[in-house]
Amino acid sequence: MNKRELFPPSVRAALQYPAPGAWMPEVPPGAIRLSAGYPDTSLIPTAEFVRSIQVLVQEERDLPFHYLGSRYATNLRQWARNHLASRGIGVDGAQTQLLITAGAIQGLDLIARVLLDSTRAVLVEAPTYMEALEIFQNYTDEIIAVPMDANGLRLDALEQILAARLATHQVMPTFLYTIPTFQNPTGYTLSDARRRRLLHLAKRYDFLIVEDDAYGEIFFQHPPVALKALDEEKDRVIHVGSLSKVLGPGLRVGWSVGPAPIIDAMSVFKKDLDHTFVEAAVGCYLEHSDWPAQLATIRTTYRARCDEMLHLLAKSMPPDVTWTTPQGGYFVWVHVPGVDTLALLPHALQAGVAYIPGYYFYPAPIPAEGAVAPAGACAGTEYLRLSFSHVSPTEMACGIERLAAAIRAVRGD
Image (cartoon, rainbow, N blue to C red; front, side):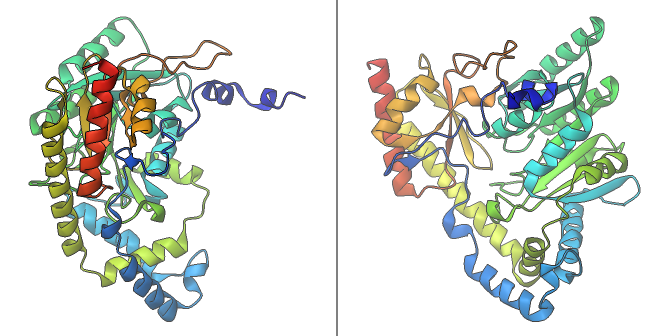
C-alpha cells in the first residue's frame, strides 16, 4: 500500500511545499548566527525561574501537575487580560474572548484551521514571517502577497488587489495576516494613518485582520498603538501575542484575542488541554518578578544591539548595499543588489556566518500537481534578514565582516 494515498487531498497538497524549517540553514561549528531570531541568552531570567518553580511547588504541591487546579495558571489568564488592557485591548467575555495558546504559532494555526480551506484566500504582507506562510500553505494555495514600503503595508496596492478581485468575481480574502509593529523580517512599522485606513478597508471589503504582535513590547522609543485597540467594531481584528520574544520561546506561552465565535471555534480544535505546569510556572514568575523593570532592560539592550548592527553595516558593507532602520523588534532587512542571496548562502556559511535568504519570506510558487515547489529565484532574491538579538557585539562585528567579504567575493568586487 502506498501510504501517501491515505492522505486526504488537502494534506497531499500541503506536502508538495518544502518541509517546515527548510529556511533554517545548517550552521557549521564556529559560524556566527545572524540568522537566529532568538532572545539574548543573558535576558532569559533562569535564576528567577528556578526560584519561581520552587515557590510554585512549595505552595501548590501536586496541583500544577494536574489538568486543573493551579491558582498560578488561572492567574496567568488574568495577567494576560491586564496586560492587554494596558495596551488598550479589552477582553469582555461577551464580544471579545481570550485563548491561551502554546505560543503565537498555535494561535495562528488554530485561526487558519477554523477560517481557511482550499476554497478560501488569505492576504499576507510581502515579505512576511516564513512560519506563518508554512501554516497557511497547509490550508490553501490562495495566498495573496501585498507589497510593503518603509511605512509598512502598502494600502494603495491592497485596495487595488481587493477591487480587482471583486470586479472579476474572484474569491475575496477571509483575512489579512499582518505584523504591523516591528515586522519580521523588515523591521517596518505600519504608520498610524495606515492602521486606521486598513481598518476602514477591512470593513469596506469585509475581511478580518490577524494582527501578529510578537514584537510589540520591544520598542526603542514609543510603542505604536495596537490595531486591536483601534478596532471600533470589536470584531474585525484577531490579536495574537506571545511571551516568546521577551521571556523565553521554549515556554510556549501565547494568546489570541478576538471575536467570541472565532475564539470559541479555536477552543473546540485546541485539544492539548493546556500546559498547566508551564502556565503555572510563568504565572508564578510574573506575580513575583518586577516585570516592567525586566522589559525596560530588554528594550535598552536590543536598542543598543540594533544601533551597533546599523553602525557595523555602514562600516563594512559595499556602498550600494542598503538596509532598514527598525524602531524595535529583532531584525534588519538588507538589500544586496545583483546578488541572489539564496545562492550566496553556501559561500557565507563557508566564510562562517549565517543569515536567512529573502526567498523564504514570500509565498512559494504554487506547485504543479505531483511536483515539489522550486527553491529558485522569486521575489526577495536580492534580500536577506539579519538578527541582532542573539549575538554579542563582538560576534556581530565578526559576522558582518565575514558577510561583507562573501558579498564582495561573489560579486567580484
